[in-house]
Length: 168
Image (tube, rainbow, N blue to C red; front, side, top):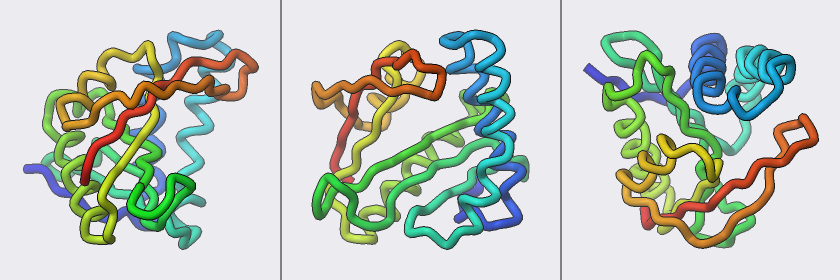
């Protein structure tokens, strides 16, 4: 059974473990081992402040049979794209949850919440060279906009991101 709910301050550890495991599996191969190890560890600890800060962004937590295995982090207020356009900042599923449906359930819940908040479109950025995430977004109804940008994760070697968008 998949359960989706808004994350709270007590969920920081679970969110961190999901983010660290997913990031390590999907992104670590793009970086030097030392940088990747530091980045994974950083992701284990950054969620406590994020979910406890009372910011306008929203974090949803997805669990399968009671085990937290996925998260989404998105804007719940208009961003730089103008009225009606929301940004989804993060979608991560623990590798143990890949194929379980938790990521799709989280995306559905995220889009429902954005629609209920008056958004008509959602967009996100993902690395160009991550075919798993790109297939997932396409399966969720997102399409490439044609926009791309370099993104530096902090190691001084930017990686190319591509933008995806869909109606809510």
